[in-house]
Image (cartoon, rainbow over all chains, first blue to last red):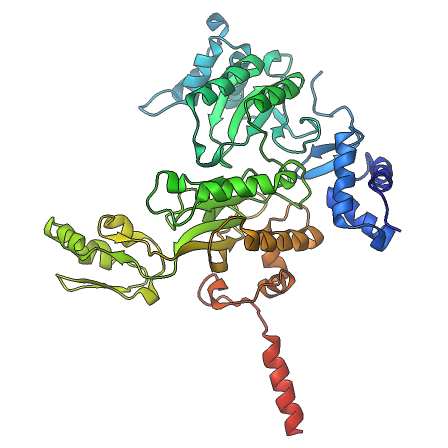
Amino acid sequence: MAKTVDEVADAMYTMVKDAQGMKKLKPMDLTKAMIEMYGDEVDKKLCKEAIKQLVNSGRCVYTYFGGSFLELPHREGAAND
Amino acid sequence: MADNVQETPLLDELEKGPWPSFVKEIKMAAKRNPMAVDLLGQLEKSYREKIGYWKHGGIVGVMGYGGGVIGRYSDLSEEFPNVSHFHTMRINQPAGWFYTTDALRSICDIWEKHGSGLTNMHGSTGDIILLGTSTDHLEPVFDELQKIDFDIGGSGSDVRTPSCCCGQARCEWACYDTMGACYDFTMAYQDELHRPAFPYKFKFKFSGCPNDCVASIARSDLSIIGTWRDDIQMDEAAVKEYADNGMDIQKDVVDNCPAKCMAWDGTKLEIDNSYCRRCMHCINVMPKALRPGKDRGATILIGSKAPIVEGAMLSSVLIPFIKMEPPYQEIKDVVERIWDVWCEEGKNRERIGEFIQRVGLGNFLEAIEVEPIPEMVAHPRENPYVFYEEYYEEDDEEEDDES
């Protein structure tokens, strides 16, 4: 049975949360991981929607360090308060 | 405000000479904006100590978008508090950079209210660059820009803001509607522009003719350059007029033809169009006498980049000729297949040109389902490692028959 956007978004969120501070994940890393985890139950379009939901809801943010990554919102190291 | 401007003897050197000076512009802005004052101070210090004091990157942006804001903080926030945050915003320019004065005034008013007032019209990607604001002002700027129908452009690992030459709006050489194509691609790929999902940046640039005024062959991952596939149009009377007016057609036109496909006997110009390389030289020298052909379209090239991670690369031919008609579906299909392969196999910060070099042109073409053709050979003696399987199959069959 095909996964829903919410389910995929939750699984992606868990991955990002577990990797926070150790490894920066790109959106394609998450997509590949979901396809590996769920097989035919997900596709790239669904993963794209899940990423959009994560970012639009503010659960994850895009970050840039030489490339673009998805991370949990955090206080930026370089930021001046 | 002007009294606060510090002594800047090194920067002052850059005001000398008859050319425009960014220092002069920042000093003008400093008369009314404290960010510009501190920017001058920090810049002078950087020049004096030969150290850059900007911290770059990070998480700043507007809600939902992953590109268009380039985070920048000062390392000297106590000394120069007004540039403690100095983020850049990239704003999607109109195709061909056509504005009304009202639109320009509105953008500048928004930026004077929320930022340093300093702009760069335009950045190398083609965007309107708004220089210097704080994190708190990013969302208000975005909201106000949306009210006047402007949107943020691309940055990071996404589709960068597509750009084009002014095309048929002002140029008689444009072989297709560059502005229409640029707008169409910009709207079609909004998601890819605002939500970075690629290994690295991907740039589209649309040039109307091989003069390539937006330098797409040197700067874009996908260059769409106008061309023609029939004969150059010639007005023989106008050619004669050029000669009568003193132009040395042999020296200035014929001898400079890279394909050596032209001949001039002193009265008549002949062109062997089958050898023409569409370089535009002859047309540029004799614009009243020569014109591009009537069967017009574009050549699609792939893979150029400026030297950032690795060296510079020029685009090479992917599709020698294609008619440029909306909705450009054939091109979009190829583009999406390219993205699929590149996203799947590309390394972090690997541009599409570098990716093709790494995996080999033959493998790349097979993956994107495009047949190899001689026009794809980028330079003499290049071995693109294309294997034509049907020949192997024929050979195998022959061997089987012999045995």
